[in-house]
Length: 183
Image (spheres, helix red, strand yellow):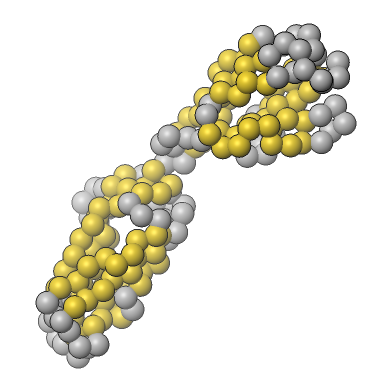
């Protein structure tokens, strides 16, 4: 066995806590390689995550702390009694998820006339570089995506809307994360 490397990591380099991660290793210069995977926590504690066997390690990140982890793969030839014959290591970051979202500003704040633009700005707590999705509910009660995931600001053009209450929501469809606007 001359070397081992990570041939694929999915998703690559970082993800949110709770997302499964798949690591696949590739050894060169060996015969029937076996692979062992170890994980070092952000606190520096090493543990064997998968004993010698498959080249793929599926890491369950649910319940883990956010931070940078070291993932190490060790390889050896089948039948070898060596601890390992080749080793590779990468760092992988788990980001904390978004824990809450609020409207940080709405302009104008409560009501306006039809045809007046309205700007909504959302603010997320937790997470890294959150993406925002805004929803709009018609007076008939039908929800639709007003703006796909992206910017924290949504500019609503009210031209053509009826003079009735309209509701807005952002992120996932979570009760309590709505703003009501009367035209």
